[in-house]
Image 1 (cartoon, one colour):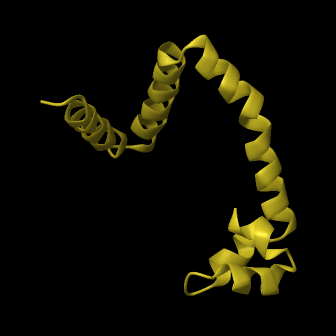
Image 2 (image 1 turned 90 degrees about the vertical axis):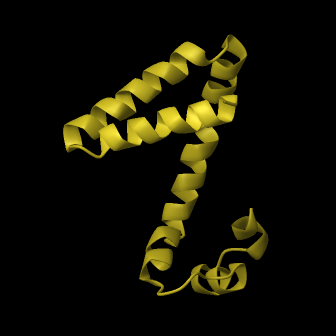
Image 3 (image 1 turned 120 degrees about the vertical axis):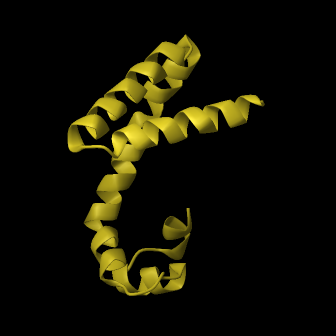
Length: 96
């Protein structure tokens, strides 16, 4: 069995456990976070920590542009041009 197959099997089992209850879901998330911290190298941790501000910045920009609301109100996926027209944001900003 390949490494990817073994990992997929473990993840399927964890998903089944997580679906049992809200408490099981929360415990599964906590266990995955703990596992991530145990597996990552110092380089991985440094990269994660130094780049985490980017995610927060992007989320803030998306909130300011009301992207989440605009997307959730749409009955279908929107193109970059449509999002640009609705938000006033530059298409290049939205395409990334």
